[in-house]
Length: 274
Image 1 (tube, rainbow, N blue to C red):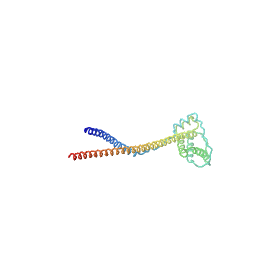
Image 2: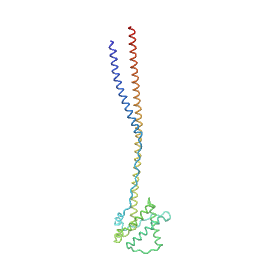
Image 3: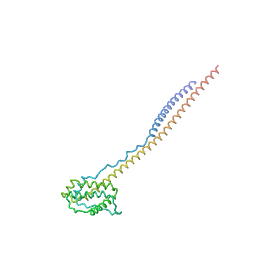
Image 4: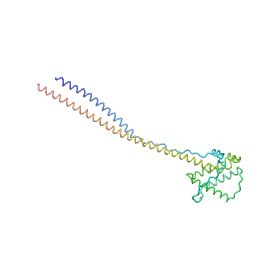
């Protein structure tokens, strides 16, 4: 009968050891979780938004002189009328006078090169013709976003076209009946097309930058949420680790006290036997 308590005690101690080993394993796992989650908090918390690549400007593109030559040979361009001016809403000014004067001189030089029969104009008639053309150019420049850049481009392009040997030969050979106003029509349409394409390109670039910036903000927000979750989980794991450690400490104290009680009982029994 004395062996039964001893055997029961050994069985209890065996299962207690198994339980303690299990607790140590859970403590080790909790400690590893604290370390891993802590590292994740640092990694996620230090992430910063990457600035997207700046919006690119549209590539520069000029009105093509080769496309103009093809345009002039089309049936619908041979007798192209002068472009109609929109109604004037303001009093005439001297805007673009220098550019228009240059256009007029280029047209006069072109007429001489192709042998066109023109009546000699005095200064007053020439000034009147320049003013009529200037008013027309000014009205077109006010449309959309043309302005001064369009007038400069028109002047440069038209003078280049009127001085081009191939276009001069086309006019001399009668392949085209008129050149000046068809060139104006062509440049206006081509310029507007280039500017529209440029606007679409740059708008797409601005949209891209905005989209990438929003995606970066979303990524950082998710990283911050991940860091908060990891910090919470790390705190829970650390709390479990400390609770298990306290339990083991308490179990150790209880085991020591039990051993002390047994020792005191044995001493008391020996003294009684004596």
